[in-house]
Length: 367
Image (cartoon, rainbow, N blue to C red; front, side, top):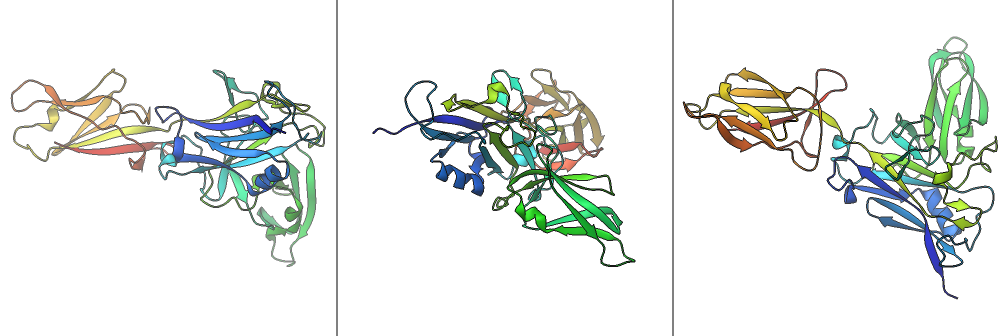
């Protein structure tokens, strides 16, 4: 009997920095250990593709919408993948909220509808955004939960991504004088991998966590969770997978291509032009920057033998260079093009700007 496989779904990263919008080998998406075991048990196949991953299933025919040879059942299946940056420069060119590499990740799933230009975009459904706030990565079997402000006793609660409470643990300080500022929660080990919210009854705060093991290698950038349906997993019995995002209708396969879209980081471009080679003939006060097309303007500051040009507005980093020309005059001659200025790229150093969120791409040019 001939064995036939077809694509269930694929996940690819799209990135605004790259000319092709595909980061290629700069990023990889691989199954988590628990998903890798599930793929083997269910005879699914998982293969890397350009800037992503694809999952294949054995089917009964070569029809465009064939049936699974091995039905998955009504409980639903969850696939989880780790997104890793293979280039050390990827974080520098990616517009991301503040996070702690190795301790936090960004979460993406197929539980919100966001179709743009035909792309089915994944995002953080709990934050209802394409890229939500960073989520704590918890790989230890026992959860160390911080209580702030400290208290003599409280109840630590955990809910899953669907809002169902998974445990409520009463904790008390062993010292009648010293309040409790952290609690070790052994019940954490009983939970399956996934996204959880942990809180306590006294502080009023909460922390978002992703529970997983064997995924901390290489400081993962993100976690992608793909569900075929959620009505069998969620306590409320609601299927949260949008219609266009479903790759299974019963046992019938309709392949779906998902996209994780990352935007390029915008920085303030700064050029420090130093008159090193022709101090007598070139006056830095005559230097100017011209862009083609005229999309960037710069404010010039003269500091001795150097002219410092600072962009008037942040500009997104791009793999393809931007045309910027340094113009000036030698002696009493006419203003002319002196050289093409380099554009900041993935390897350009970043400096702190005037505000907490501003980053500056500083480049030194010697003329």
